[in-house]
Length: 91
Image (cartoon, rainbow, N blue to C red; front, side, top):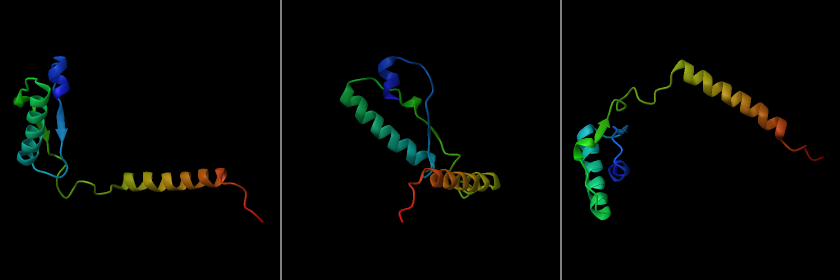
């Protein structure tokens, strides 16, 4: 966000939180941004802080059938690839 201030690039930057609710994450982000802006002597518009918290909750990081299939496929293919690249066995 502060890079946006120093370059005058007008866009919206959305911060994602998977561990904290919006108020807590907003406060932490605001404190860091204000302190850094002071150090850099730049103006910072606090209304630019946008925190998306839709990733918090019991549904986050629960595996899907598609994800499980992808993990199994990766493990199978990686194992086959690793065995092709493995050095010859010593006798």
